[in-house]
Amino acid sequence: MRPTTEADDSMSKLKLNITMSLDGYVAGPDQSLQHPLGIGGEQLHTWLAPLKAFREGHGADGGEVNASTPFAEDILAGAGATIMGRNMFGGGPGPWDGDSWQGWWGDDPPFHHPVFVLTHHPRASFEMDGGTTFHFVTDGIESALEQARVAAGDKGISLGGGASVAQQYLAAGLLDELVVSVVPILLGGGARLFDNLGDAAPRLAQVEAVGAPGVTHIRYVKAR
Amino acid sequence: MRPTTEADDSMSKLKLNITMSLDGYVAGPDQSLQHPLGIGGEQLHTWLAPLKAFREGHGADGGEVNASTPFAEDILAGAGATIMGRNMFGGGPGPWDGDSWQGWWGDDPPFHHPVFVLTHHPRASFEMDGGTTFHFVTDGIESALEQARVAAGDKGISLGGGASVAQQYLAAGLLDELVVSVVPILLGGGARLFDNLGDAAPRLAQVEAVGAPGVTHIRYVKAR
Image 1: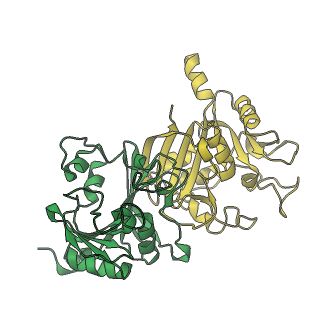
Image 2 (image 1 turned 90 degrees about the horizontal axis):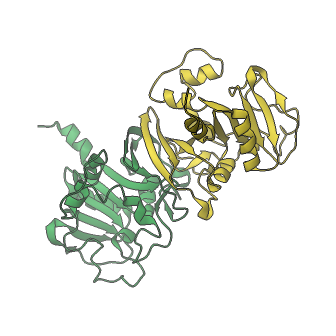
Image 3 (image 1 turned 60 degrees about the horizontal axis):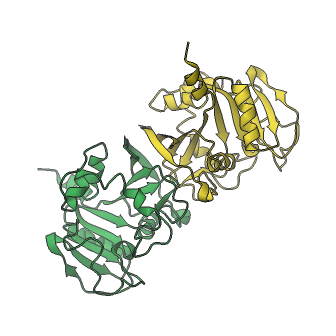
């Protein structure tokens, strides 16, 4: 049995796994229904999509196993809740807005735990197949984190993105761990992970770096 | 004796080794005589300065050996010439301008080969101790590359920086190899390596990634 102090320590961890182009973008320009990751943004995940670990999470067979596998598994491993922004969920202005929209992920989303969507648009919670429930939080990032902590219990919390939500948690000093997967593409425009931090940029310490086909995974923790 | 084809292949390689903050900057804001790398920019090289490989190149004893050592050695290893911009040399407008300025590196600069400085300010070549000669090129990046190729003979050419010169060679498709050393700092402003490329962004392929204390080195080559 793990000592209580360690359980307490792991309980509250908020973690972001995100793929970034070499020029610093986590989404391309002109995000839309047709291009949820912006123009060219789908190239960001060419390291992830062929992996067995990713395909399994989306109900598909087969796939590759390589040095990226532990990082694909890590994206949701150990998380008991996810927080994401309305752009990642697909809310916000646009033809796909409204209470009929149930996210990008089909009937059985790969989360299998409560997901808290930050939005200005109040909406009732609803449950999908496979244990994913979407909740909508309109009173800010700290409220979302508190609700996610309760839902996650002794597990961690995954910050799903996108860039704006990640920036808000970074600037507030609330992010405990950050895995940046750097891919060798230059998007030339779009949403930058580390914009808009002002003087609130957190201090980070590198704890791990792993090269894999077409991507380098770098793990950082908040420095004390 | 190496076959001619291999010698020809290695002869023309233009390589850039550069340190980049996690938010994409290769220099901080407000570069000046007091802050040649901009405000906070000196943090970029905290991985490099303590290394024995770096200290030796600057005539100092002692220092550390770690996973960064091959990358520190690689910065000038095998190069028969260097190309740099006027900001890196220290020319351009400012109190340190003029023909008395001999660069930031003292009497015995660490290059030990011909250095071609891109500038709009014509100036006669001059030689320093230890084999470094500074030449000033006013007719553009392709001319500098041609002159550096002649000077380098069968060795490679090191692109010293800074960001503006690197961008010009990237956009022109003239850079053959790029080593980006990513450090876990957020500068929040300054000069970005991958700005101003427009539609001329080159295609890159990742060939190596190595984690070391406080830095991750990623090697890319121009993709065909």
